Length: 73
Image 1 (cartoon, rainbow, N blue to C red):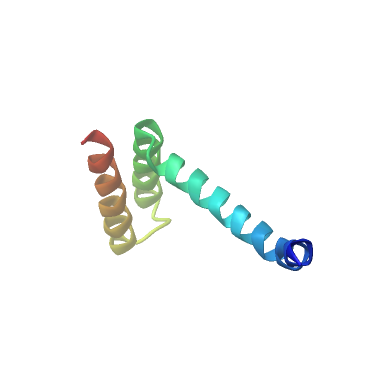
Image 2: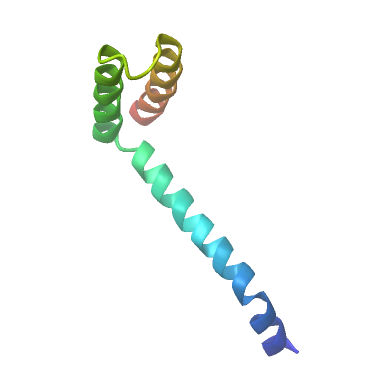
């Protein structure tokens, strides 16, 4: 019966595994100080080129600075 269960749940387990890998990659990217600083500079450039609004800029900047503060601590 365990073999049948393994076969039936293989697609679900694969999706869960992929989701965990994506989460790991995302967490790693946001935990890298250099990457966060690069994203802040890109955000500022996009704002200066009027690609995003001031509200979008402020919201995203706050998120990135919070991530940077967590990384420093």
